[in-house]
Image (cartoon, rainbow, N blue to C red; front, side, top):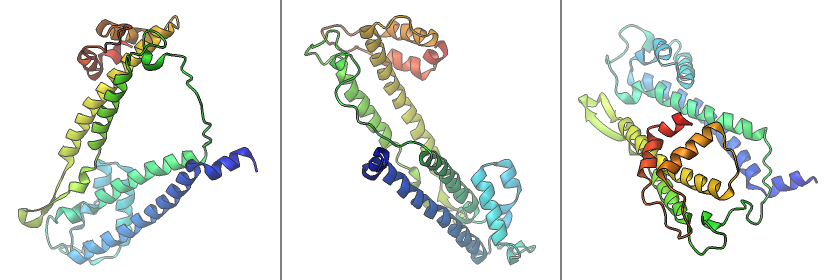
Length: 274
């Protein structure tokens, strides 16, 4: 047995990819089942098939939506719902009107997963273990090697805390989908999309702080390593960082205020300069 084959047997990478492929195949089949169920629901409700009009995929050219609309139209070919006056209402509840959009969004998400898995299946998943420190820099990026000072090590704790907060905002708001009786049941679902957008904005603000911490750490490492000439863009970025945050000296005192650098990151000024 070759070394790579032995590694595949004990590594979680191959196991994870294989199980994900099987689960994704099942999810793909289940989506087709939901199309059938959705089409039958439309007939059971006596729904208005304006929700399947071809103009929808022309004005909202999402791939998954186009596939879903095509599938639903095939399933309902010859249905009584296509006859004039068959629909019971001019406007159905959102539960029925949004079937193509919900199934379409699921297909787009599944398509992304399929692309990732295809790359994984055709990639090397070897994972060699690197032992012992290899950066060549002092612990905590202290100004002097062997120093007992924490130096910038505390920034790692701050970065982790910010990242945890950002992850809590990633909780899908679709889990909080609210039912409503507004408009006599026509608006039977209340969208959480505005909350999604607000949470995304909050996450971006947190990520700007993580980026600022990373810039401070990188600048400290560059000063300690003294590598010589920096790149044209990275050199500009380094100089802008150092204008706002000085080198952390041997006393280990953390930078007093990273907010000016956070603002520089958030506004895109640093990126534009680089």
